[in-house]
Length: 410
Image 1 (cartoon, rainbow, N blue to C red):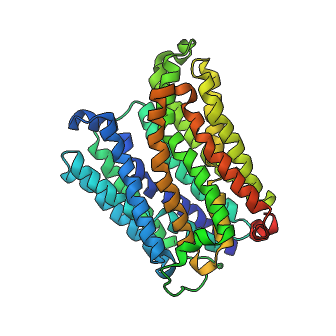
Image 2 (image 1 turned 90 degrees about the horizontal axis):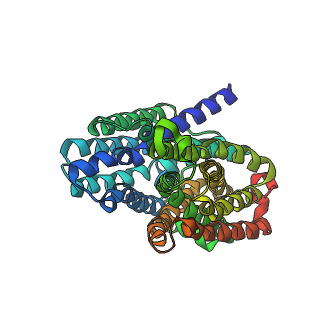
Image 3 (image 1 turned 90 degrees about the vertical axis):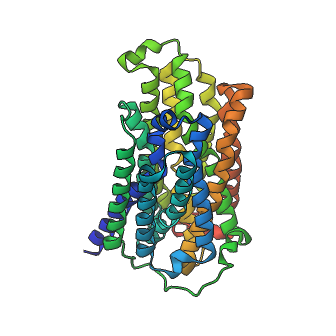
């Protein structure tokens, strides 16, 4: 019965995370319609997603500073974030008639999501120990599939009206909040609520083991969101100029690019589960290094095939998508094992805030590189992340702190 309860909580929490985090990309699915109705440029529209990330970083930093997910009951924090995010998202079709107010609401939505993603990881950490990599891999996998869903919508023909979409996503987020409110109980590995310590988040940098795990995570995040953001546009360009364009048939290059982008990003779902299983048995450091070596290689090579046969580009994109997020949950698992149990929520929140802050740089970097060298070498600039991240995890693997990871497997 205990095992049954554990997996019921983990599966429902993963479903809730998928539903609530769809708020992040709700505007992405309807961007073409907003561009037309509000007369936006592509750069203006990009801020509909970028402001969510800025809000998330601000909310995560505040949450980590005040130990929110450790001092307050996590299921209530998660549910409150989901309900608030749902309400703010629903206000966009109700009261926003242009970009300025929409951006303000998107920024506030990002703040609320800081009470969702890291807190979900905290709850899973209380239910898992020997299989923590698998548990967090399940959560990240569900989140990844949710991230990919707007591209599926676009590939299947898009949407005729944007307001109902945002209302529907708000409904999803509300349902996710209710799931966690009723079923998001903490597991047997929970620690007592600690005293408030505003400075505890600084241990993410000052303690060697945590610092190396977080540096590995930063290398991973430098690559991840830039790939997720720009792979649809890259594929559109590659397919439109491909010598074998006839293989797309009635779909055409643009819709095919959207569908392949969905598959490439969603491939990270099973990738996260496989890496979680592997990390629990083989070690977190080895698994993350292997993942970053493969994904970094894809970043360097995919542009070489931009004018080649579309099947080759597609194959590299799918491998890249499978491996680029596979290691994500293992950095969180490492932090949860290296830190003090009662402050694990604070450490996870600090980690995600640093990572998402860095993504703002790499996402904005790619268009500038494309203007200078084209798509052939644009993604190659992302390889610096996996290189430095792998170096950090290699140093962690050789340190005494590795004995705390994955039951001593490193």
